[in-house]
Amino acid sequence: MAVVTSCFRCVTAAALTLHRHQPAFLAVRLRLRLPRRRIPTNRAMSFSSAASVASPHQAGAWYVVPDLSLRDHRFAVPLDHSSSGSPSITVFAREVVAAGKEDATLPYLMYLQGGPGFESPRPMEASGWVKKACEEYHVVLLDQRGTGLSTPLTTSSLSQITPAAEQVEYLKHFRADNIVKDAEFIRLHLVPDGKPWTILGQSYGGFCAVTYLSFAPEGLKSVLLTGGLPPLGKPCTADNVYRACFKQVQLQNEKYYKRYPQDIQVIHEVVRYLSESEGGGVLLPSGGRLTPKMLQCLGLSGLGSGGGFERLHYLLERVWDPILVPDAKRNISYYFLKEFEMWLGFDQNPLYALLHESIYCEGSSSKWSADKIFSEYGNLFDPVKATEEGRPVYLTGEMVFPCFFDEIHALRPLKEAAHLLAEKEDWPPLYDISVLNNNKVPVAAAVYYEDMYVNFNIAKETASQIAGIRLWVTNEYMHSGLRDGGSHVFEHLMGLLKGKKPLF
Image (tube, rainbow, N blue to C red; front, side, top):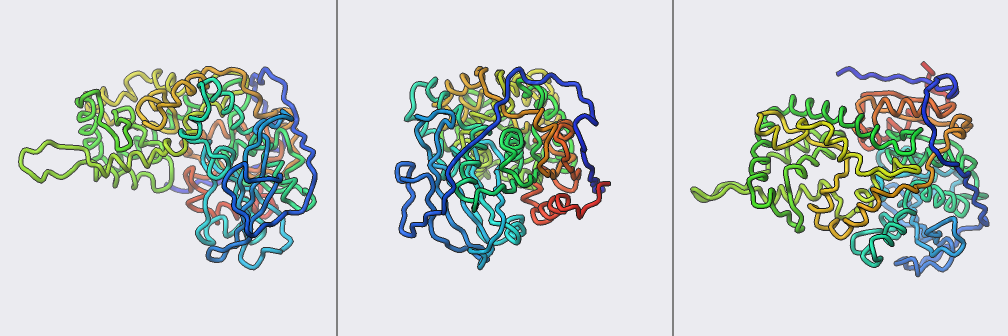
């Protein structure tokens, strides 16, 4: 397919009249007033828990990976920024510079990872977008609260909080609104003189960046977005998101089976095996269960990212154990079962499953939106019906279903909390459309034409509401463009910000 690439500028939201219902809530501008201070460094310090952080900010010594210098920062921030008596949690950020530039006077760029519920990347060497960014910036890789080294929330750590209603009260503080407040806290403690910085938001990190533009634009010098323009305009946008995403998922399935038509039969055989097994599935190594519907979740990683088709095909090559003894029973291989669990990753990052639909909620509940829209498609996405009728089994995409909390062993203790979160209505605002309409912060965004996770049409609608945004629309990359072509993607967006790329 030819590469479709275009750049254009949305001058004002008024230029494109899109009739939407605005959220039925009042947005509150974020104003953090924190003392600005020099970075304390303790080379012998051990960072092991929130309790070990005695001051709001502590920094470790510089250390190296090939061609990069890194320094670890821990910040003691309130669990609830709106409460003066809130307990503290630890938020971790890793500062990265090109080797030899530790003391260079450079501006700062914070990276916001996709998710929700995933930590920032761990640099192994100078490569990709990090290498390019370090030519001009001190790069700050944030582990968003609840992930990585930022008071990580796992099944085991959440088990300390009971009952499920109390877990929900705790978890409600782990969305984009508080991630932005953490970022502002960090900026005012880390950046010399508390100067505004640049934000790079990938996927959900882009959603957080738009929240930042809404409530704390004074902290931003510029914003870069890659596959991360969120839906706007309704108390809960989840239904619209999933209706759009299911259509793109269907297209991705069709493209996959056109490339690997032999996998239609492979998946049919697996679905039959699972549906005919006792209980409708087989045990996974961790104690969970692989069912036909869970099998469809391979599409989450396999259908929407660069190289995903190939990785999925090669995984399906290993689905069966070899028959070593005549007349032995056919079994799904341990290799496949273990890889399946590793592909999902929900056991290590439960926040993704718990909070995924809530990222679309402002004053309304999601009510298991993905599962509801899945049902609207009738038999189209039914794996057993598709197998019986000889149709390709459509895999699913970025959707969280209630059955995850039955079939994934590590999520079972969180089932009640998950159902309470799905019904929760009093979610605070995440965006302020009036502020975005009058945005003054330079913004450049990569919008991927065939994005399976962040729908292209929804992203365009949102862009029309952010004054002054410059878009790079391309099908050269999938949603994983920043990972797959990071240096090129970063350089292109910086060119848009600096006026090096033409408007048309």
